[in-house]
Image (cartoon, rainbow, N blue to C red; front, side, top):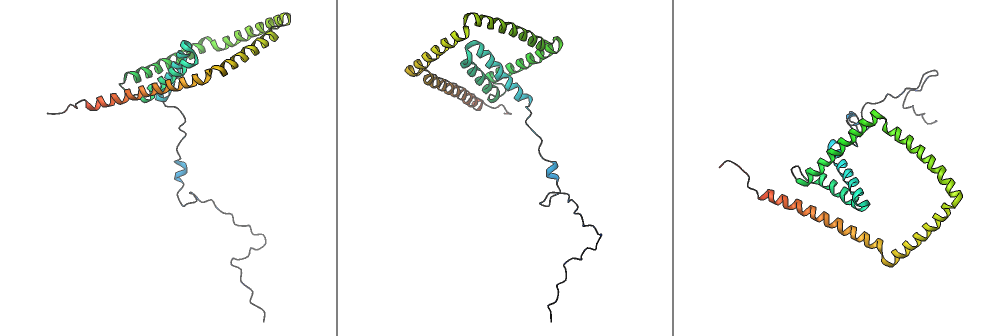
Length: 212
């Protein structure tokens, strides 16, 4: 006798019947209710007012340092002021001064924005700069065609660069400058750190007032 034919595990579909459609399950695949997706933390990349104040302090000090002593002093002023604004507590002289500089920089920025909106300074400056550039370019092309200024300038620059490279190779100027900058930043960091530790020790040694 022939073997028994196995019965299908599910009833067969008749012709014309539609396939069943799976309905979405609310919740996450692990069996939760899906609230973790809706409660995902929002983007926190926006700076807080305190962070904006600290950044403004560092930028303002860097600009002042650049005008006083170029990029080297700009790095020292900007980094030192930002460190004081972020690491020194409230009531500390250096920290309060750095944060006050940040407040002044923000006020200046807002005032400049108001003046620009009122008098259209940015667009006027762009138009004037563009006109001056076109005039200077035309005059420069005329002088270059007459005197060969570009070629002469290239020759002078090549000579200057070659001499600068030879001088640096002989006296190791860049290496010494990097070493000096590293030592100076280390010195400033140690001074700021020791000042913070001394202030903390003084606060701990001060007697706390209380009922006798």
